[in-house]
Length: 354
Figure 1 (cartoon, rainbow, N blue to C red):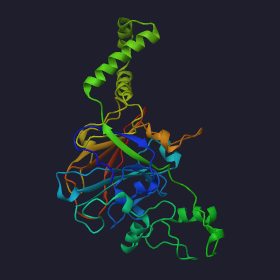
Figure 2: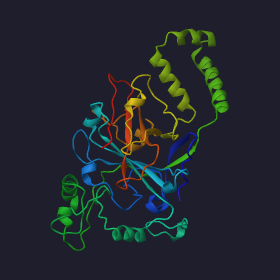
Figure 3: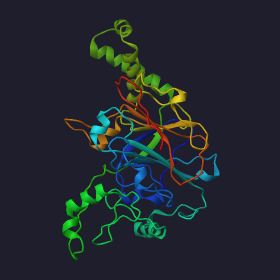
Figure 4: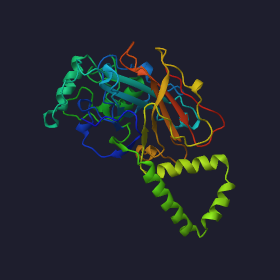
């Protein structure tokens, strides 16, 4: 089982290669890319709840974070899921609408997972696939999201979350393989590369101060300017310049971090502008306030392989806010709130929970 993220202190997330079977639901993974490893197997979000707020097309899985909260009995298992639209045009419009966040949680005693952690060598993915079928869940062959009863009208064995994904599969190989024995059914890959997200505590302040001193010394040596001269130059910097430099200094201690987690803490903003005020963060549907939980860093974009010459998905940081009370009312997957902050924008942008 993946080590849960601690509640309280700042944890940094890093990308690490992993065997795919370790990233499946029985191991409660934190991961990026591939198909979602669903936690609760009841009330999976249906296709109508997984549509981009801009183009209206299906979003795909971006990442999930396993983050139990000890203070609540019903959150022994707890995972946050983040979905994204891959249409770069939606992102170039400086809108947060291409993002969707869900929270799922379970008590220790539940109908899906064992009370005690299972041994790695005893896990068989095929057995968990059978468990999924017992819950009457049909997953889209392309993206792994809830397909409901939507399936190929010809073979009746291949399920899809949407007409868009059915068309992609049909053109990508199902047209040739459908209802034909011995013909391999190729499934086009529309997903992000799949990797584990591992976490470790952020370096202490003492370590940061030591590294900052070393950085200043190196800067003097590299630039040829003295500390006094550098200080005079710094006075000419704008407030935005200073904020961004502070951001760079903070992440420079661990430059490969793709995620920062601190439930109830504060995000590390990339810009002085476009930061939310408390009234910008809507309350949960249960009435409780939402608090900051984690943020996705711009370094994550490198691992998504989305860079294009014309237009590409981009962000400064993505900050996720969740229900402080971890409510359990309603469906098993609760919509949460995301605030996107870009490097340069003329106005604030928000994502309203659905």
